[in-house]
Amino acid sequence: MNSKYELIMYWSEEDQSFIVEVPELPGCMADGATQSEALANAQKVIDEWISTAKELGREIPKAKGKLMYA
Image (cartoon, rainbow, N blue to C red; front, side, top):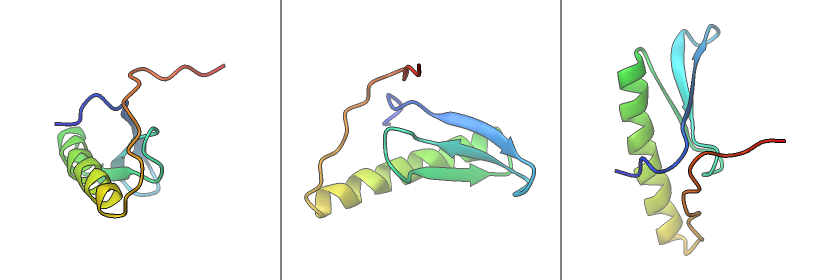
């Protein structure tokens, strides 16, 4: 499990679902009807993101843990 990446979860009224963003992996996000489903879907998307990056020979960012914003 690649749970070392920071995950940001929030409810989207527009989509009527929970959204999970993975800020360290550009464009990596998932959704689900419940928080648990959204987290499970996020893990699948993280795995797919990393797999695709490897296939394309792209750099895979190392998990930084908690991100700091100024």
